Image (cartoon, rainbow over all chains, first blue to last red; front, side, top):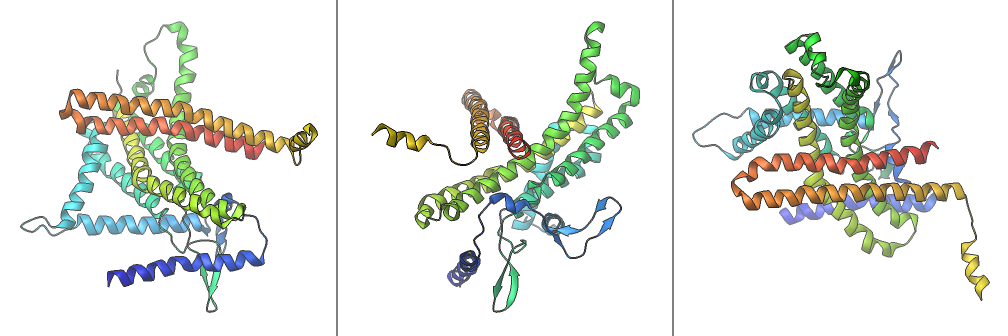
Length: 295
Length: 89
């Protein structure tokens, strides 16, 4: 039974390759891995003033990620506690423990964990899910192919976190929460004074702009780190596979496919989890250092 | 005889594009050099620390991955900067 399923899955995965091959023979278009990031609008355009609310590939991935995150929360955390922990409960507790010990307690002071643990745990889980969805081939792409007269989107890998808008929105949330929480816990004057280190008065005109710039650089580094990691991962895999089509040589597949698979495994095993962990841990550290400034 | 070699050096296509490609590759290459040294230092120190005090392993692991990700991101700042320059200029 399991073998039959695996065979069916393999056949299903090869279908788009066959369809793409027959299509590319007809139209001579050059392959460019960057086309994967041209986001076309799906359905009607929903524009509210300057806000563009229309659905595209990245939005679809985000919505799917949201649903999956909610499902993980419901399935693993709402377990009826029986006599012995079953596998579901054990996994749920493991996720919770990573979120608490590795993320929240690293950065947040004890008194703030109750308030900010939900936020950092959600960040970790959500970014992990969206990153992971980016490496599972899903039929959510802009290109279509025909099977028996029905147009179906091709299977593609695309992570919503490999677009800067998504990661910038997440980083902006942390940025806003950091300062709001800092002001709430310390009072505005005391909080902004805590930015400035103890230096001679003559140095202050030099130090103050640097410190303000440093706060803004956190925003940039937090968003660009996640964005660039996911972008580079997808770009590497696409480029290696694309080499076969760019140089039009089938024998390159001997080199290109193992290399792409190696990068794929590296991304799935290490980068996806590390980036989710880093984003949540740094958010916790930033919020924690705003609540309890060093001096 | 010699001239047949020099034919290879004749430029075809846009020279500015070639220059941009070389600059992009050099920038990413040098950027990853720095990050490589940094990541090596982090894991080397981790091995030393665990060899001295194996009981601290789980506590050190969080710091290790934090440092790894912060260092690794340096390559990608270079990559994004290079790509921006490649596309915009």
